[in-house]
Image (cartoon, rainbow, N blue to C red; front, side, top):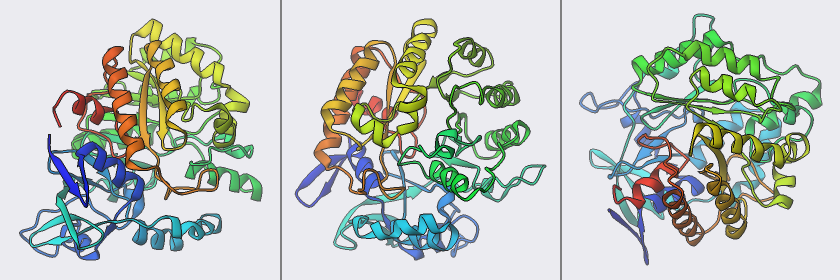
Length: 409
């Protein structure tokens, strides 16, 4: 296992990933110029999937292969300031909470990660191979960028295939950028965007498989009051990709009243289904995820997840937890309760630079992440819960935890 050193600290790749995801980085513009895929400044330099547009979801790769979201805090806030709505411009007042000690700078012919700007070189980093995925449009004219992202080396994911009724009703999840946009549209009387068509979604997945080297897909949308509203969309999306050679098809849904929909989704090719709770602490969940508490309820989430685990097997149901939004003890309680039922507690590191939660954009310290890593590794082992096989996701750490606990990092 590779050890990285910061002043007075030794840490693993997984611990470093948690810090990078939660703190962000500052990427020198010379790095974009040299390694950006479209116009590398040096003909001998291979192109990489590195773009100044934050909607392309950049990642960096550590020397032992761990994949980390690379949110360029300073530059991307500048970009967002020119690209997004006034509601999102207001988030800039939190900029003082978003300082990062990490930067990516040129180091000869390579790129390297530094701590506290230039003073401490941490390691060399690289990026995902270049693809022209983000330059594409579907046959109907829908741009790939802004509708789908490539994560790591194996995944194509959709940001929001259908709109969120929770956001529209004024109860979006606090951390969700899309939910806030749906809420703003409703407040101003603006129409919500149409759902992405199944033909467009299928075309995007096929292109990613054939031209970007991915093998897995995440189907995600907004949230609906009863889970039935989205079922026509989900049915169409799964049918559109049913015969593609996918290793994993992760489906993120609103828990429906009728579990017959769950059976249909698995019959159409879903390999795992999430009804994500995000936060276990009930009082915090009522503030952070108010729509999930008010409309679909904690009970329905757990009932549907339990149904999936009992009928389709351990790890076929999963619930995402956003790591950093609650105290360790409540997170542990929720993860243990789900794992004991055969439900995989997955782990997405909170990126505070997305939206403030409960009035803060301050991430927890390293000790918190270390406790979470140890806790989830133990649960995965005790309850035989293996996360999806891949080389890792930008923000989620469950597969990294599995690999670390088996000494393969």
